[in-house]
Image (cartoon, rainbow, N blue to C red; front, side, top):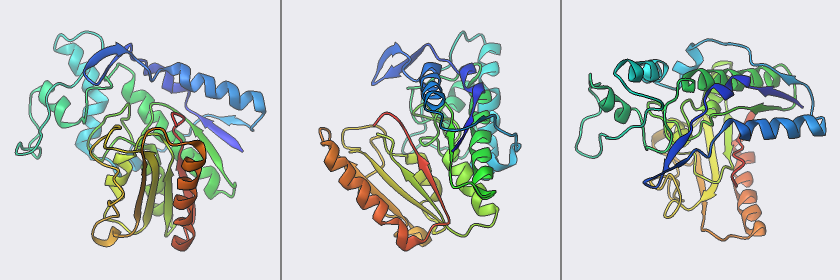
Length: 286
């Protein structure tokens, strides 16, 4: 199996993050990808390839153009305004506040386009996230060309990023970009299986009212685990997407056998759907 490796990931290297209100050293660092790359090479998984640039258009099929423009220029704007280091959001358009009008204020736009304060924007956030999306598209190319599978090794991760917001370390939703590109290439049915410890809220939201992309996720119960406000078992889709979303939230302390039993339940949802492509969001935090 060939691996598509986003070497550009290293330019996104935060020093700190907020974890449940406390400023702590950053956990999601370049060392995570370096460790996995070393393991891939040690076991001889296969060739390690660089991503091919497919341009911005595939990202705009999933994310709003104004959101992508903001992420691309946000850190430079932050510095131009006198900011130093990494930029964190601080205010959000919650219930009763408007989100349809893009504010002039940088601080307001940071909140408009984010879901939490956990991950800062750094000088390299856009470059790393853009290259990660290109890596996912390159992996798709390999599979569409006849390879049975491909492994995309990239960071920052993607599944918490929605159509117009970042959060949970994620800026561009790599799995969703690949799924939409597969549909645009002519595949009728795509499935995404998310096995990260945390629910892939961004991926679910992007495809929630659609029947052409099936989403299944095994994750920690949102009653106690991030992202808290999505990922419950009763979320099964909306409109044309009813029945094409399946969540398997598990309480803390589940044994390995119980987790694998939930995974088997999720896998059992896939054959009736007859997907032509399976994308796995493989967070290693589980």
